Length: 212
Ligand SMILES: [Zn+2]
Image (cartoon, rainbow, N blue to C red; front, side, top):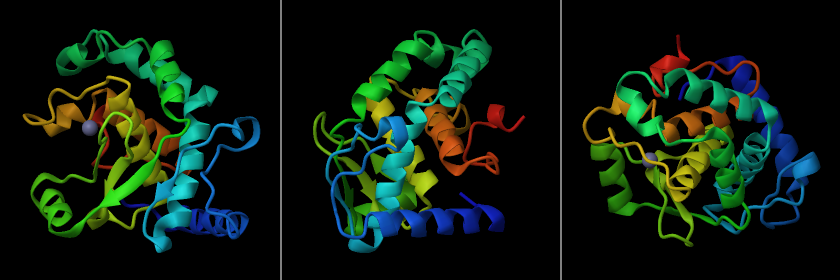
């Protein structure tokens, strides 16, 4: 997920400020402002990744509670619900109920990683960067796909929380380009968009409908 230099510097500055605020604590990360009481569960990741993951958790909380994310999701569902290859996956998706389900999935959400030979194998041959794990266990991110930027990790958190809310991408084994326009991928991309800020642009990993 390439980012331009301006975005990279903005990300470095945000991460530096955030890391300073987290310096003395490894407490579960929470949203900012009005969302400060909404917190993930334990983030058990390698020490050098902890600040990035905590910032990503905060960005996820903030995004799924934002008006802009709600509007983007509503607009996407309205435009593509009845149209083409994506219609089946979006047909039963009510944006208001989906956002409520995403918000309900955040509090106490734990995060951990997997790696080793299995992580390398799944990344190399299947492109796996994460999976949603057991129903109440941690979301599991593949260490073979790290490090990544906080907005990119926020994308993954939202994608996996969307799975736990019952959303699926039925085309992922047959047509990844179509799957990327199905709910968990689009939700992840829209969270990344809001986490990254106004300079965000979709890339080749994102639904082509967001690039038009
Ligand atoms: Zn998925």
